[in-house]
Length: 195
Ligand SMILES: O=C(O)CCC(=O)C(=O)O
Ligand SMILES: [Fe+2]
Image (cartoon, rainbow, N blue to C red):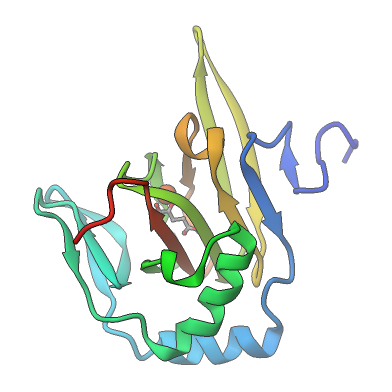
């Protein structure tokens, strides 16, 4: 692929400002250990205003509910996520405790996520990918047209969505080819920390 189409992020044609990417964020052994633990978690079908999203989730720290009730305290961050959170925080330039919310998602073969921006109470998003690769698509409105970009979130990689990538661009994942898990950590926007 020509260099102007695929840059060092694996994004084309040009990554949104504020998007960062690290391949090999996890070792293969760490991925296996995490997957083994993830398989034991009580994933629940994701429900958005009565619409079942064809993916399953578990939250820790805080849980954002799309039934209108918003943020609710969730189970504490489990110990198996703490070392990972430390590294996610270093990647995002945050203190580990700032990443108070973890959302774990299981995408079965054929599951995806529609176009959205993450809830505005949250600030930065660090996403860690396990098993099947995902195409993380980005778009933003530019006058009459959509400006588009995409990133292949390889297994064991991490991405950071911050700045314009977070606030101006929407993202989505088309139906997956194979099972994937993602572990996303978020901090709260300044002044939006729940008490
Ligand atoms: O699975 C992912 O990497 C993305 C998840 C996502 O965009 C979200 O939960 O808001
Ligand atoms: Fe998102």
